[in-house]
Amino acid sequence: MMDQHQLDIIQAHPLGAHLDAVHASLYEIAPTPADINSVGREALWNPGLSLLLSLENHAASRLLLSQTGHGHLNNDIFKLISAVASNPVHSDRIKPLLHVILNHRPDAEIWEQVYHAVAESTTPRKPISSILQTPWHLTTSSVVNSSEKRNHMDKLLSDELGVMYVDVPNFYEAFWGGIPQLETASEDIFQKCTQGIQPLFQEGWITWPEDAKQERVLAWLADIVERFLQWAEEYRPTTTRRPLAQPDIPLEGSVAKRKLDVGLVDDPKADKAGKYHWSHILVPGELKSNPNDDTASKAHLDIARYVREVFTTQPTRRFVLAFTLCGDWMRLWEFDRLGGIASEKFNINKDGQRFVSTILGFLWMDDEALGFDPTIIKSKHQQYIEIQQDTKAERLILDKVIRPAHSIVGRATVCWKAYLEKDKSKPFVIKDSWQFPERDEEGELLQQATRQGVINVARHYYHETVRIQAKDDDIWGNIRRGLDITKASNYRTGRLYRLEAIIQSDQCLSPTQ
Image 1 (cartoon, helix red, strand yellow):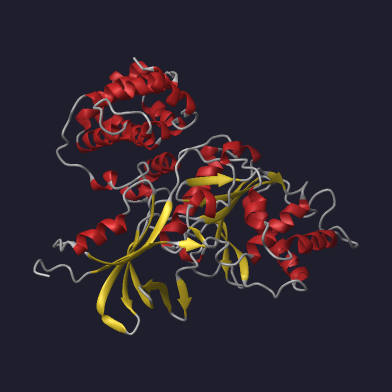
Image 2 (cartoon, one colour; image 1 turned 120 degrees about the vertical axis):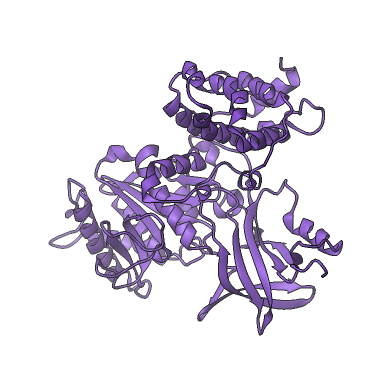
């Protein structure tokens, strides 16, 4: 039985909708608790791991004490994850826990079953490194992305993202509010849209296709953007960004043959004849003719698929802005390494000026505002980072990506092969990743190993926590600009900081050095 202290912690840190995605995944294979005993162990493996990883990441598990008297419950869950990951036989240990999840039992009962599940001491045969090194849950990076496995990928992506927070207050102000002249220009341009013998807007956009069919919406969007740009020239020089509409042509750069409804690219001649790569997409968009498709299983998951491709092919993206347009209802999105959040939806035929300012904002945002990392600097045909080694400034040229990040949520570790400017003789590896600050700092551990002369380990050269806008680059405070997601439908605790430039020389391979 739980003591009062444990109950107080559980009450102060409710699960809420934290396990909704896991419940939905489990429900697909076991609609009732009785079904859990009839399905095979292997069938319970994925939802079981997802459940344990979600619980291990929850704030309550980091506060509830371990039954061993040492550490906290999250450490016990971590060991259980190792056991289940290495052998599906151990899925039997969490069946009572799965029962209470399907029954929507109170939080206290759920945590009590967690304690029961971790009580048995088990030594895993072979821990799976991709599980043990990831501070989040199972991600799409762990499987091959192919068109034949789309249903499997969609399920994994849904589990990876968990609940995508929608109707976050002040979303537009956070990402569009700092764009110079945007509100003045959009107000002026919208007024021009309502004037003249043939106005563009009169109780709605005059040429808007009522059936909202994809081809007609794409044609309308291309035309309306050109009109906006013509009127915007007095405020800013004409931008080279344009909407790309190739909904029937797979973009290059993905393993699966993935098509994009619409996207913003930096090409004034964007048309159906050109060949484009996912690395060209600045802002992905998803179109649905039915307004009722603005749901987690339809438009929301579809836009997440596109965002995953953008992150995979653009290793310098910190976050990705996107949009969904279901009928004439628009929602703005931001995806980062904690998942996806979205604005309140608005009707473009009722709030025409908001639509104008949204489109202009996408066209006018600088690269940093679109989510590109300003600490990775482009110069001609090179990319580099600058570090301060003691009192000496150094520049490291990024030669190529060794390991890209194939998921949205998680540490998103990207490894680059690099070298010091004007000195290619000494190769380096730069590891750029997001990390929970309460965990041991990886750069310091590697630095200590180097000082102690540990062999067969990459030698530490330099590490730092990335700072952008004079702040440590964390997600909730820096990327999401202080948005209060507790005002949305769900809330999850935790914070990721990014550690860039854990720089390692590969001249560590000889055990004699």
